[in-house]
Length: 137
Ligand SMILES: [Zn+2]
Image 1: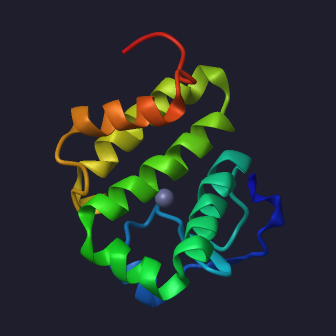
Image 2: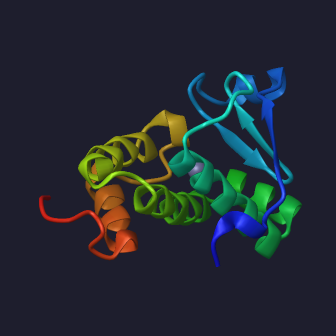
């Protein structure tokens, strides 16, 4: 099921979220999507965040938050799923670069090192995309 059935509002990231995220990061916490400046984001990025809203609906919002903050495996799985959606909505020519960028981020402090390594993250992203990345790698 795709994101159009989710209700959401785009808001500016409040100070509390700015404290715990990198300046460039967007955060979804149902029913809001918090962007760095409160402005619209690209369709592909929006679908990434809407995927997180769906995950929160399916898991329960507070349970999701708790698990996201306490389980690297859960955080990793949730992100890989949302990244695959973002890639699906991105231009073919940009997919490889997006996957590369996220593989780097997931294995960095930006995502609390939820991926043990770049390679593990890249493999999971490629798998989740089901060949949607095209050749390469
Ligand atoms: Zn995400």
